[in-house]
Length: 191
Image 1 (cartoon, helix red, strand yellow):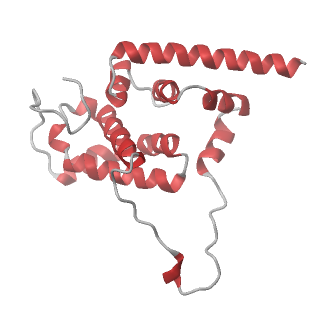
Image 2: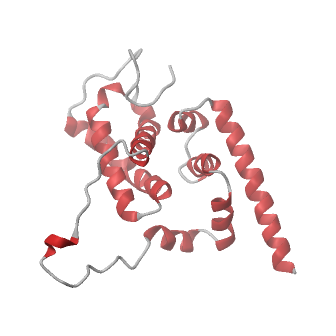
Image 3: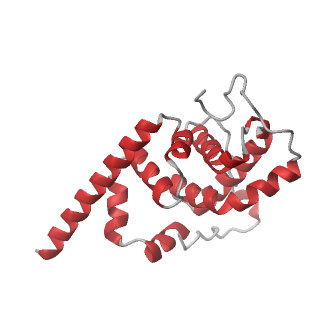
């Protein structure tokens, strides 16, 4: 049965009850993946960290719905996507910290660095970054999950809440669009 995490009517098979501590120990190795994906979704390091925290809380609450430990990474990414989409739709109240209670008249300093940009600067060329920004978000997410996070097609389908055939189509279109973009970039460089 396909659906969003937390919407299974009656799971066919669930794991034996896992204690919260035991579940957290299973989740810990996946935190870097959740943070990288959170950065891709939010494009803001602070929001990505909040998203990871909210994802772990939601996953902990719904740990009984996980069907097998082998699917944990895909399931966590699907939970993260749902949490992100709910937040983007305004379905979750957000805590805003106001400067008024800080006790100082001077404005609070803004963060100077953007972790995602710094990581991309070291890992991706500017033309590749521009090419990724130019393709549809669903295609970009599928491509990122496949090539960077190394998820299987089935895991990507679970994360994106779509059939495996749609994942294959998105990947083919993303690769084609990125190739076209990169070839256009190299043509402009020669001029």
